[in-house]
Structure formats: structure tokens, C-alpha cells
Amino acid sequence: MFKKVLVATDFSPCAKRALELARASFPQAELRVIHVVTVDSPFTATEALLELELLVSSTWEDDAVRPGHEVAQGNPVQQVIESAKAWGADLIVIGVSGQGGQGLGSVAEGLVRASAIPVLTVRDP
Amino acid sequence: MVKNILLAFDGSEHAQKAALLAADLARQYRASLCLVHTYDPVPDYLGEPFLQEAISKRTEAADRVVAQALALLGEFPQLEIEVLEGPPAEAILRVAEIRKVDLIVMGTRGLGQLKGLLLGSQSQKVLTHAQCPVLLVR
Image (cartoon, rainbow over all chains, first blue to last red; front, side):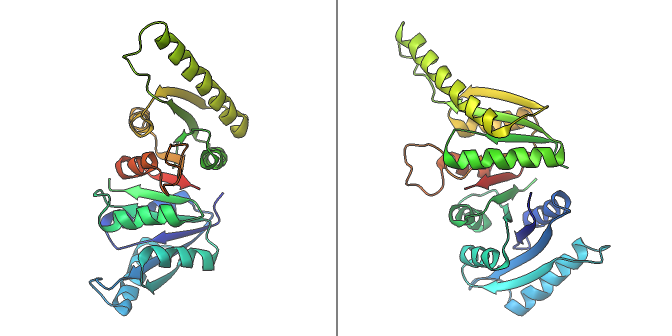
């Protein structure tokens, strides 16, 4: 069973769903949330970190222990893989936007291709 | 949380890992497990007796793959087996929808003819079209 679960988010509704699913499905696992800032991100790394803190504290409102989170810069696929490796994750969770081949869908696809550990993809409801 | 797990199994190395993980998850969540295996469509232009022969060849091969999966999964109280005619992604998605599966577990790449491809076309299709979460295992 999974012990360390890394959730990648882009703050989209389906990433939010992925985060909630990870929280509900792996209560015994340690979670960590990551967001990758790219050159065409709408916000800077500092803004992203604030946003991420807000996301974590609103999702884990009533919990004393909240998951760790980090903002990385660069290629999303590469950064998520590296972070997963560095932290010793045994599962990556990511949302897939419906388009496929565009937007987050391509990051999810890239992750599935590149990751040596299992990847859980979650789609829009 | 997770009540119905679908395991797509084609006998490939990735699928074997997926099977072990699916069994682990199903035990953990006390979920039911549905094993899906697909075989290549039988061309309908084949006349008798070739058609019968082609069908029995495929079902025999499918039985072997299912037996392999069962050996990997071990004892399971709630296990359903579906052997369907391909293409795999369509069959998997159909079963997932009909059975109201809440998790699909499959290998990143199957036994397709283009082994060099990094992500199997069938896995890709499933992950972009499935309504439920998909767990891809390498």
C-alpha cells in the first residue's frame, strides 16, 4: 500500500478533485502537494506558494497535521518526477483535463510516460 | 471509498505489476475486483472452418492469460472475470461504465506491436476517456 503520495496541482477544479481523492483514499499515507511554475504561468513562484498554502489549509481545515507543499520552477513533468524521487514518493496523483494532448492533460500524459512509480490520474467529473 | 476496482490485464510485464498492486488495493479497501482481458477482434470475413479455428485459438490464449492473472492475484472472494473482444481501450471503458467501477488499474504499456512507444495507445485512450481515476503502473 502507498506510504508517500505526491499530488501535483495546477489549481484547476480537476486538480482539486485529485487532491480530495488522494486525501480520502490514502488516509494512512503521508501526502505532499506540488505546483510547478512555468514561463507562461499566470503567477510568480511566491504567489503560487501563497495559493498552495491556501489550498492545503482549506482542504485540511480541521486537521492538525497538514501535508507538506512545495513550488518548483521549470518543466512540470521533470520537476514533479524529480520531486517525487527526492522525497521518496511511491505514488503520484494528478488531474487530467478532458482535452487530452493539451494543457494539464499533456503534463499528466508526460508524467505517465516518464514516471517509474505508479501514477493515478483523475478526470473532471 | 474505493468499492469496485477494474484490473485490465494483458499478461505483459507492466500488467503483472498492475495485478499485484490491484490485489493489494482491493484487499486494503475490501473492494470487489473485476479482471478484464481482451483479445484481438476476429475478422468476420473469415469463412468456415477458419472462423471457428480463429475464435478457439483466441479464447485458448485468453484462458492462459486469465490463469496467469489468477495466479498473481491469489485467493479472492469477490472476483469477476470478463474476457472480451478488443480493441482493449473501448472494452475496458465499456466495462468500467457498466459496472460503475471507481478505479481502473492497468500497465503503462501493454503487449502492443509497437513496444517502443513509451505510453501505450490503449492506456492513453483509457486515461483520457475514463470517468473514474486511472492508476497506471510501470
